[in-house]
Length: 502
Ligand SMILES: [Zn+2]
Image 1 (cartoon, rainbow, N blue to C red):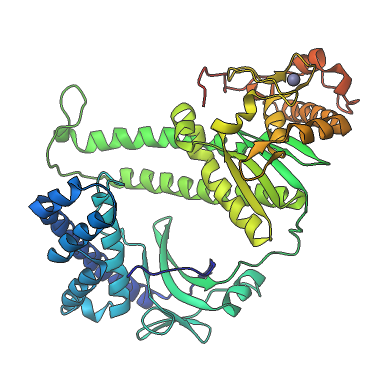
Image 2 (image 1 turned 90 degrees about the vertical axis):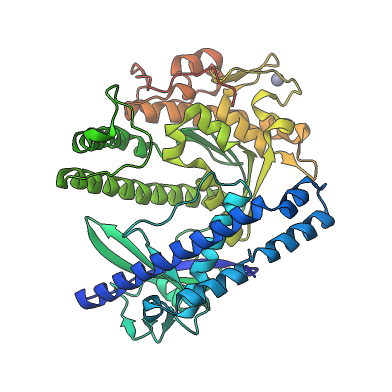
């Protein structure tokens, strides 16, 4: 049975104090866990292979979807002992070896479950291949309950004869909240920093994470428009247009340089694995790594880790900013995959998808919600609140309708998103018209102007913001007296208007 998690869950991470002797014990256990995992994965894949070769499986596949088909598959699964439960039994057998001295039965079961789920991804076509864990690549092990095996007891991380104290600087309210909440189970996590191991306990808690009092929550309804590198936020009193996690872009050059360096080093260390034309030879190969290459890889891993941490904090801050305005958020559901196809690196780096799910989680924790509606039906970027619909190319940064409505495109989409309502998730044009005439026009205009001035001061005006001259030309009536002289020539950034309709 899969571990069901019907109750809300949050994770509290606690760094652990580990001396060299304890570190050795943990490393041996991680290694034992790795071998157990690989054994379970190998066995699961073997069973999948045999099952797929069987006639019964082929017959089941040809059946029309429905209960009959499910039943047929269940029979095949049973015949080939392909189930989470059967794999648990297999893990138990493996534990009758040296592995059993290092891995308790609960931890073994969670490892078997992990392997089973990985094999399922392959079986259901959700993954092209699954990976066995290489040496030193097992970075986490988890218990099943907080009663046996890996657990948290009396203020310490406990696993068998190992008892580790938390490494706490002060009474961190976030950690205290986790310690005071019910613990479902505990996970041990190892991270490598500069070639050194750090260990953490992750308490998988029941309930909701602590809402820090400084993050007060607003009650407004917020429209959100998320582009590959921009974000527009529109409420009833406040509107903003800014770059989305722009700070992350500065590191890309360094990352690419290190990646090229590693590639050169790999080639220099393994000339036997390459064809004269520079392509990699097919088949099984041995790869040698020089000390130098290892050092470069560590440097790259460190940058990736810092980037991930930076992204997380930027996302968190942005989400809190939005929630301060309002906890009901409406936005168009973006196809991040299509997004990625068009904008590639920018999207992977800024991870708008994970931002939206984080924002959703935070909004729900605060008693609000995030509604996503399909682009196809609403088509906000092509709609005007006078009722006209006009297809725009992506390079058109300004919404300028024959009815006289003018606004920056992303801000305008965010504005309209606020009025998508009801079961059918349709745009309430009446509402939008009313609010527009009551001051939204001015609100969006000044947000646009502010975004342009701010980005000019930062020396980087993304092309999606449009230009100040454009703003002055099309909407002189919304211009606010600027305190900073805006007559600096905008330096347009590298993001040119691609002709892609995402
Ligand atoms: Zn119009």
